[in-house]
Length: 178
Image (tube, rainbow, N blue to C red):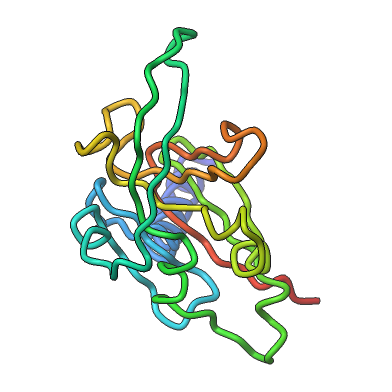
């Protein structure tokens, strides 16, 4: 392949990659302290800890948790956040028909790519789903650098670790259609 063909090919790939970055659901202008709700929603929503604190009292939830850090048991702590469903309701589900909510999944994505999945019916119709929260505070203070500014916690899960998403970056809503 000639040098000029390689240069054209590199330029084409660069333009394509730039276009993908621009159209990506991750909003490049979002500050790292925020989380974006995107996908099959009526309106994309970007919130930070301050915006979550402003949610109505019935959307706020807290729970006491025990945990280990680097294999060492830690004293129980109280985490506070907003119900994930309350945040999703603010974005609204972009429904094509009235049953789309039954086929919707919610993917919580961390900055490092870690993902946890919830179904919309789980969040709306189960006691454990009602407890899933976007956490912004632990023991009355912002989350530690280990957890990031925002995280997802599922205190109703039997094993809470697998769906604990630290450094929460994005929440994608997808309606599973044929």
